Image (cartoon, rainbow, N blue to C red; front, side, top):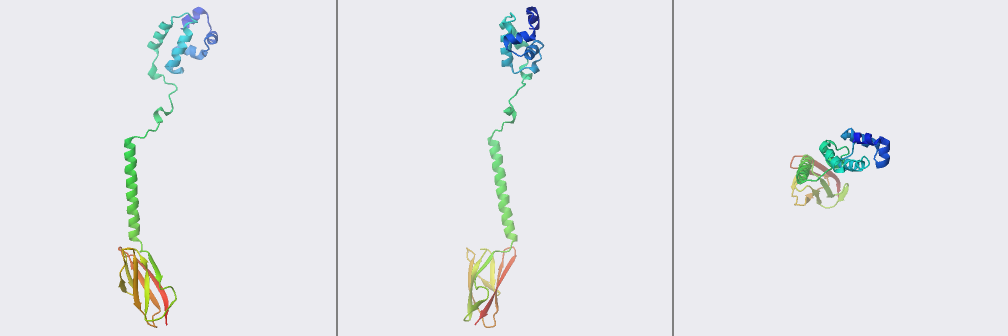
Length: 199
């Protein structure tokens, strides 16, 4: 192509004016600097546009281009997302599912372990602190963990499946305090005492 341009006595600038193709691209085609050129379809268009002004056979120049042009080495403007594009696959779904299941199991086991090592919850609804009691007994009731053991003044008390308990404790005018003790399966203990006045 360079020889044909020389025969026509066209400068690169002149050929650029005629074809509207930048002279740097024309020169790159002439010197076969493929790495400096755009993708093959664009270069093919350049060659077609250059052939007519230079009096070259278009089919012949296209054949020479196809012979010399290395399309695989020349992807100067690859799509940036061609390699990095994220695609969701069944394998990824499976892996994420496994990770979520493992996290859920570990979280549950961690919660249960912490709960196992913690003292049981204990709420006393009656008697209230400094409550005045008349008669020879006082009703003690409240709630705790369903698997905890409860004693009131060292007397075992049954706990129902909801963790509720209730018991009537005998008192006298010398009784100053009721002690409620909850013990978990791991032996952890929570104690609440209520001061009372018996009349």
